[in-house]
Amino acid sequence: MTLSDRLVAVIQVIGADIKDMIANKADKVNVLELDNVEEFTPTLPYHPATMSFVSETDSNIKTPITITDAVGPDQSTGQVYDSGSTIEAIVRDMLVSYQVPDVTNITSPNPTTLEHGSSLGFSSITFNKSSAFNIDLGVDGTVVYTDPVSTNDVTVTFSHTSVSSQTVSMSVNDTVRVVSANAGATGTARYNNGYRLQVTGTNSKGATFERTESWGIYFRTYFGASSTLFNGSNGSVIISDMGNSLLESDSKRTVTCTSDNEDFSKATYFVMPTCHLDNMGLSIIQNGATPVAGAFVTSGSEVVNGVEYSFLKSSALGAFANGDSLVIS
Image (cartoon, rainbow, N blue to C red):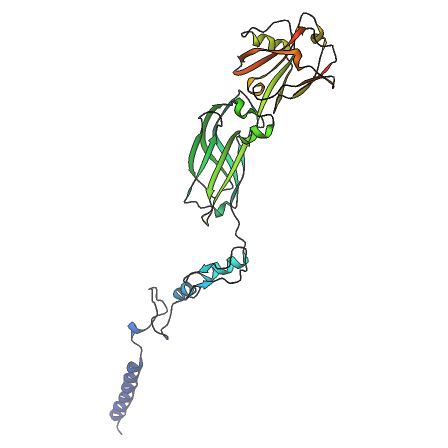
């Protein structure tokens, strides 16, 4: 066999091998290449699948699941996980307790004492939140300021943030007032009907939450003696003469008489907000035993420093001895 014959034979063999290789080679349009970046969705049982497709679909349940025995704190009997729910979400409900968000306290304004007749004003409020990451940030919350006596209520709508402390602008300029209808004889009645702030919001499960801070109202009363006889327009003079004031949640108090109260040129006075006197039966006990309310007369009332006061004056001058105890309730 000549050299040329041998070359022809080799070429025929190589050609046959190449022909077989081409015949058995997968078509490019029928394969997923290693550098593929295009989305591919398998439609038949033995189709290949991309890592992205597997990670996105394998973690989802194919048919709904109805809970018959709740495992975690965020599962309940009869709850349904719809098809498409992620296995991760189910496992988290089983193992991780949902942390309910809440407004824990309103830090500003937070007055310890609101005095009847005083001014109350602020330009913003600040409040703290727990589990703020579970607040529905797409739903607005509200801040409501309530004045139980007048119509100075203020409502502000705002968007919750995921921070634990949030400040919201809110302009309030008010005067604290209590009328006889809600003065009451106890601090509780006034506290429940008092001035208050309320913050609301919605958690990520669609439930609303709120926090309310109420402020009790305090009242200033005066006891002492003055040589000035009340005439309806000189109340500030008498209050200045007495100087003995007490700020409490009601007008009940125990006082000790001084030498001024036994001075025969002076009358003994007990001055209290009219809203209290209108709503209570006055009792005055001397030295723990003797009722002496009849020894006082209501001389009238007058507005002093923005507050209407009633002036109770002893019928006699120098009516009480130095050291006498009077329990007024």
